[in-house]
Length: 356
Ligand SMILES: [Mn+2]
Image 1: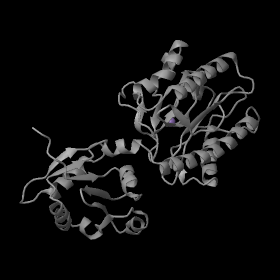
Image 2 (image 1 turned 135 degrees about the vertical axis):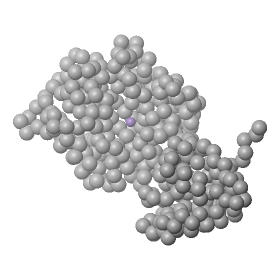
Image 3 (image 1 turned 30 degrees about the horizontal axis):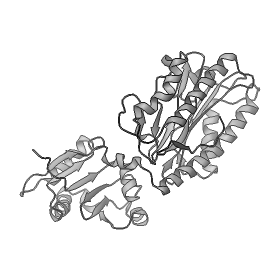
Image 4 (image 1 turned 90 degrees about the vertical axis):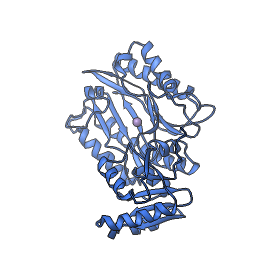
């Protein structure tokens, strides 16, 4: 039996709403139909919606009807009827069971039932291919990120081993302060700052550990600029690194450079992951590299595609991804190096300018 046609899509994922409409409020949903798109929101966000929304999208104020299910049902039914909606696509990955039940209830009418079907990932797939404008915003976001890192690196180099040294938490707060100073709207995620053996924990939570002279320092930071994320990891070695620190650093760097060189549009996420992984495996550290080799980035810090064993879809031209192999020796130290690149037909264009 052929799949029934979807006449409308209910978009509830916040990042997807922002992508499709420009609206950034935390309450609201969209209905996409063949001829017209709608944004439903309430009085707290109507002004923002009017100021930020893309042309042609109709804003529906649900302030009054929200508290009155019958009213809401009436206005919702009117729109469904107007666009002859019989099948409604929903984002199952995002929609809570409670909300789904509500939509089911208000969608029921005497004229027949509405069928629901899953459209999870559909908008996310579109988001993989970045426009020139989106790439510019990601670049701006990364430039801010780099300014922050340069200052953080200086602090690390000056203070390590001194009696007036700093803690991971101090540096994490400094990162947030500098991100604000250099024009970020927000941070993209809580900064990861790890000293010494803490760097062997890939996503260490900054604590009270203080920086010592021979510590490896792992810094993973990202900021947001006009809704777009950046992401970069650098590992700072001590001034006189131990032979093992040097060895591990060089393996990770070689692996990362190889991936940057070989990744291109048309290969699978699995293949893209394998370039750096195989180098780390051959060097004998495969068991010390357990996370994915990278991820898509844009409105969300982690979005499609993924550079990992399970991701067998192909990378697309003009998607922006991170490339971030690492080696983590428990109880000793860890090294991760992460850049953001644009995927092109011939290879990649590196968006990260900070030295490695
Ligand atoms: Mn990352």
